[in-house]
Every structure is written in C-alpha cells, then in structure tokens.
Length: 303
Image 1 (cartoon, rainbow, N blue to C red):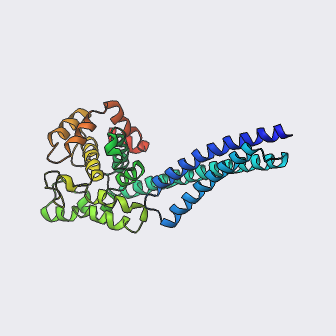
Image 2 (cartoon, one colour):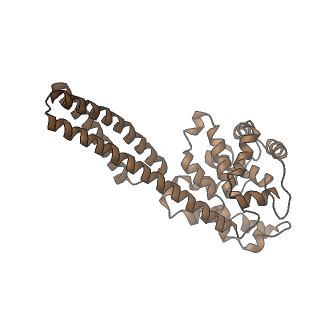
Image 3 (cartoon, rainbow, N blue to C red):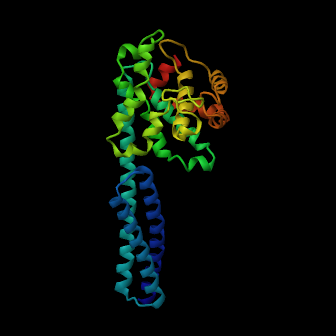
C-alpha cells in the first residue's frame, strides 16, 4: 500500500508541475486578452498561481518525508487531477469567450461597413495584414505591441466612419475641402466610440493616429517618433489594403503595384523600417490575408 501511495503522490507531483505550467500559460493568456484589467483581477491571478506552486511544494515534501498513507496518496492524487481539470476547463472557457468575442466583433464591423461599399471587407483585411506584419517584426518591436491588442485596433480602426455622412463616404468624385475636414474626424470619432470600453484603453492612440505621416503632414501633424508604433504599423497595412481593394472611384491594383507605391512613400508618409519589413514578406503570405475575408467580401474584391 505504501508503494501505491508513493506512486500516486509521484503522479500528483508531476500533475502539479504541469499545473504550474498551465497556470503560467493561463496567466499570460489572460494578460494578453485583458491588458488593462483591474488590479483586483490581476492579484487574483497571482494568488491562484501561488497556491498551485504551494501545492507542488507540499506534495514534494510529503513524498520526500514519506508522511503519506494510502488514503493520503489517494486524496493528493485526486486533488491534483481536480486542479488539472479545473485549469483546462478555465482555459477552454476563456478561449471560447475569446473566439465568440472576435466573431461578434467581425460581424459588427461587417454590418458597419455594409453602409459603405468602399469599406466592405477592408477592416478585416487590415486586421489580417496587421497580424501578418506583426509576425515578421523583430523581437524588439514585438515587445511593444501585443498581438491581440493590435488585431482589435486594426479591426476597429475605421469604426468612426459611422459618424461620417453617407453622402461623403460614398461620393464617387473628389471630396471638397469642407468634406475632407469632416472625413478627417473619423479617427477621433473611433476613439470616442471605443473609449468607454476599458479593453481598448492601451490602443486608442494607435487608432487615433493611424492617418499620421512620418513627415508631419497627417491629420494631427505628428511626426516620426511622436507617432505610436501601432499607429505606424496600421498605416502601412491600411495603405496596402486601400490600394489593392476595389473602390467606387478606382479599380484595384496588383500586389506588385501596391508594393511599388508603398515604397515610393516610405520615409515620408509611412515608416521606412516597417515598409521594408512588409515588402520583404512573401507575396503568397500577403495575398493569403484576402482569403481570410468573408467569402462574399473576397469575391467582391476580386470581381
């Protein structure tokens, strides 16, 4: 019986070691999903992680000092299984909520963009391109941009166009100076719409300044280092998407043409380093982003 007890506790120790890894993964995943979470929630995460580490230590001490009986072994082994099951359940629950939230966000953006045929599928395209560019960034840049946050900022970057009259959004010809003044308000309107949602707090400036230019001739006249990295990245992929997607006032351009245009404004309109990284991504990977669109949106852009 003693040997069986030892084996059960040994397995319990292995499970608790796995649980430490799972809890750390869950903690990191939670921080990625809710980067601006409340202090109370963050403390709770750390308390849970500490308790699991404590369980591991207690199991190890009991095993080392051979303090267990058969019942103790069974209880400890069952406890380790219970913690493992709970952690896996929580992880899958959070993953499911994340997937549902993203699906709802994509549906919401599709509904919003349906009022403007020039935007149909654009925000989803920008999101996919932004995540692709992020995956090719050097580690020093990646550390400054949470992938999850970047994806949502790119997806909602044009939500402020809800506040722009359809007559301006759908105008086939050139906008007047007065109409451009109204159109330039859409990044700020986006921020006002998203500000009440605490999840967006850390990415509002990426949305607010995604139309800034490196040379200072953008909407808010920010230059170079004054523009957040997230805004610079969205500007690059937003420009590519706008060039390659069909609009009521222009036909779409090829990937090669878009790359040449982006290179021509590198260092003036767009960040030179980000442009260089984006242009180095294989064509197949970039064009695959369009395949991630809703099928009808992708077909509309190809026709």
